[in-house]
Image (cartoon, rainbow, N blue to C red; front, side, top):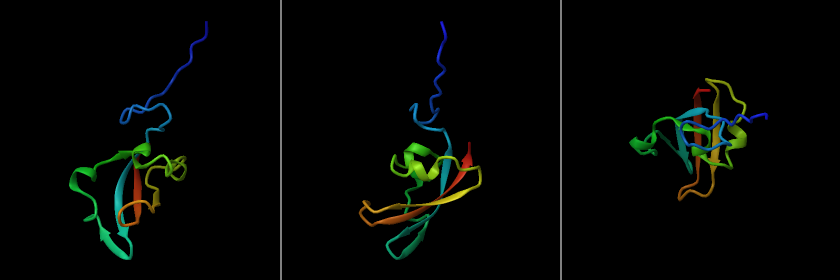
Length: 89
């Protein structure tokens, strides 16, 4: 009987995640460029693709290591543009 192999993300444990790891590069809240001061220190570490949001996943999928992507979060308390860089495939 054939078996089906399922790949699970090691970070979030979800089947639908590609396992790509991303780090924050820059945060722009409203008109103010915060650099990384807008991100709490415990949240600055690498995040997997689905940790950045399911809606943003379509923009992150298929990128190579070293690529930077700017994501827009209009539903945050202060709407923000978040620039992230892929560090691991």
